[in-house]
Structures are given as structure tokens and as C-alpha cells.
Image 1 (cartoon, rainbow over the protein chains, first blue to last red):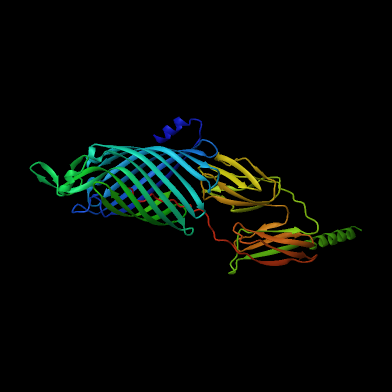
Image 2: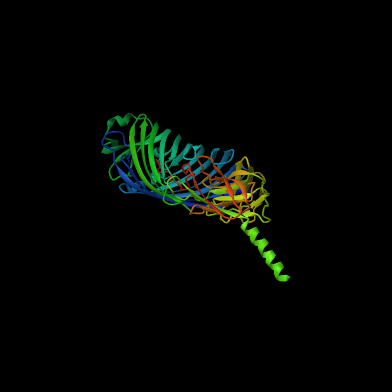
Amino acid sequence: MAAAFAAALAPSAQADGPYYSDSASVIWEDNATTAPPGDGIRSAFTFASGGSVSWIYSLGFSTLLVSSMSANIQVCSRFSGLDNLALGPRLEVRHKVGVGPMALSLYAGIGGTAAGYSDPERSAIEGTLLFGASQRLGPAMQLAVDGRLGSYDARDVVFTGNYASVLAAVNIDLDQTWRLKLLGGWRAGDTVAGYTAYKSSYGWEPVDSDALNLPGAWHYVATYKEPFVDYRVSARTWSCGCALSPAVGRNTSLTLQYMRFDTVGPAPYIDNVVSLSLAHKY
Amino acid sequence: MTRALVATLGLVLALRVSASGTVRVLAKDPKGAPVADAVAFVEALDAPAPVHPPADPVAIVQKDQEFVPYVTPIVVGTRVSFPNKDTVQHHVYSVSPAKKFEIPLYIGESSATILFDRPGPVTLGCNIHDWMVAYVYVLATPYFAKTGADGVADIAGLPPGRYTLELWHPRLAARVDRQITIEASGDTVQEVSVTLRPDRRIRRAPESDGAGYR
């Protein structure tokens, strides 16, 4: 679909590709329930695997149109309601200001994702505006900034919302094999905070009665093995982390990454995420 | 009479053969390890020799998203072709002072040929695949050779005389040159110590985006 869209936009351009890539990850989260401090914090492992296929169209000397289609599947070891399959196209215009690896590279695009969850209330479609830039500071160092404006519409209003985010990364190649990555990010918009719940005569209520004062939508969720109510809150999330990524041959790499997500707002919570990923480009 | 003519001709040829020498260059790093892909060349101090570019273009192939060979020495006036044997397109360019050019996205083996008409080093790249890099060294002398994996380069056919021997490598830390003399009868071996800068090529291996965040 993405390729057809791209071809329609640039009928005279010659497509280059397809380029295939895939990845597999093991992810551990200490707060998979995105719960504020209290008794709702649950950790979980997630196994993720995905692949993408992309085509490149030349729009000029330093401008490319890149269309891609990706599919990802996630299986959570503890909460089957979080299992999901996501599929979506992406279309980007990339422009190099100059030529060569040291030139500033800019991109802007749109993306879409349809995600189906085992807990159907979480199933959603998402539209995203993408923008970013990357600049090599030397052959062994690169600064990359990725921004997103997203809107997602789920079956349950609690899982529906909008956001803006920016993620900056500095890649430092220690040698031809080892890469160190430093990450920092910011996100503002709708997020979900989970609270354990009990059934009262009024229905499901959070055990933490302070949650009753939270603004925004809330709903009982069957995602977890125990009763939870999830609240949609407007919040900001700051993130930071680092990764170590050895190359395994020319087209494959491993990445061990740690990220800390610190969400502040009406229902603040912290999530620490450690992942081990294998990525391959064909 | 005929025998005398043949003998005379043989003597002349023998003198001519013996009147050219070979410089064997042994390029080693400070630890004694051989240095490959160094271009060794000599330039006559007394009477510079003319260069004769080859009639056919020299090929620098793109295969498995790499340039092959990594270093290509040529003489001024040589045309170079860039056949793309990959299944994806490449965008070959150079911004080096000795030759600026670009061949926008293309695929297939019949690319345009580029004339290298000025001496000096030329760095090649692909504007799509940043890790792809190769070098052309354009020479104003016909006497040159590239070191192999053993660090050896033989420059043959040198008439007697005084020359400057120079070595070039993409990662050369400091200029390497010396004066040598080619005698009428004999070859010479020149051991050259070469200090290279660290290999800082752009990493090719991809990287996953890591764990996503809901």
C-alpha cells in the first residue's frame, strides 16, 4: 500500500528496492501496568518481532521519497491482554543538505498503524506526523533527533488520545564493532495510568481512592490477570537511557538498551525498560 | 652477416632490459605489520616521464553495497566506470578537489565513465549508503603500484636516474617520501615505515530502535 501510494505521488521516479529488514527483541519492564507508586506496579517480559520492507524513489540529487510497510508482533509473558499485532505504512521525504555522510539529513513524513490487541479494548488505529534530522559530528559520532505528532483512536476511549514527542540520540562508534548510544526524550499528551481495583456496590473502583479525583476517562480493564481500572490522563514523560550495540557482521547488530521513563502529571509513574534486540538488514 | 646482426640486436635488447630497474616497496606499520592498499609511486627528478592513460576505462565495481577495489591508482587522463552489480541503486559521488562528480541513482553495469584529469586523491562515496567509501589516487607519473596484503608493491620499468619515491594511503598520518637512485643494472628494495590513522569508517550494521513505549 505504501509503495502504491509512493508510486502515485512520484509516477516518474524509479523505485529502488525492496529493502528488507527484521528484528527480534526481549523487553523487560518493571512497570508494565504503568501504575503510580502503590500496589499496582507489575513487571513483565515482552517478546517482540517485526519486519519491514521499503522502497526508495529519487526525487532529485539529494531528495528521496521512502515508502515502507512494517509489521510487528508483541507477546507479553505475563499479561496476554497486551499481546498485539501492529501493521502500518510509512511515507517519508528525506533530504540531505549537501552531499556525503557529513551532510545534515532531514526528513518529514506520515505514518499509520493499525494494532490489534488480545484485549480488544486496546485495539487502535494511529496516525503520525514524523519529522527529524540527523547530523554526523564525525565519522564515529552522529546526532539524531526524531519527532512525532500522533493521534490514536482505540475501541475504549481510555486508550484514545494525542501526543507530541521528541527523542534525541547520540551514537558513538567506539570502533568498527561497538556502538554506544545515549538517549533523551520528551513526550506530552495523553497517557494511561493503571490502578488495582475492587468491586464495590457502585461497580469497579480503584483501591487508591485518590484516583477517583483524577480528571479524564477511566474504565475497568481485563488486560491483566487481576482487576485494574485504567485512567487516561494528560501528562508529560521525560526519558533517558543508553544502549550498547555491537555489530555482528556487516548487516546485523545486537542492542542492549536501558531506558527510564518518568511520567509527571496527575498520576505520575516511572517505568524502567531493558531490552535486548537483534536487528538485521538484508 | 645475419648471425652478426642477430647478435648485435640481442646485445642492444639486453642492454635495454638491464637499463630499467624495479623498485620493490615494503610498506610496514611501526609494529612491522604489512600495510595493504598503499599507493607507491616514483617521480623522476631529472626528466618527468609522460603518462599514457589506458584506452579502456578502469572499473570500480559496486558489489554487496561496497566499492571494489578499495583503492585504485590511475594516471591522469584515465576514464573510470562504476558498474553497479547490486540489486539496489547507488548514487556515486565525489567532492574531492581533484575530481568532483556525481552519478545519480542508477543500477546496472553500464554507468557513465568519469574522466579523472587532475592529479591527487579522490574520495568516492554513495549518497544512499554512507558506509560505502573508496579512493582513487590520480597520478602524474607512469611508475606506480599498489601494495598487496603482504605490503609489497613492485614498480617496474624505471630508467636509471634520480627519483622521489612517495607513498599514499587513505589513512596516512604523515607524508612519506624519499629520494632514490635507480642504477643501470639492478633493482632496489625500499622498506618504508608507514603510520596510519585509526580506521574510522562509518558503521554499516543496522540498529534496532530498541524497545518501544506505549
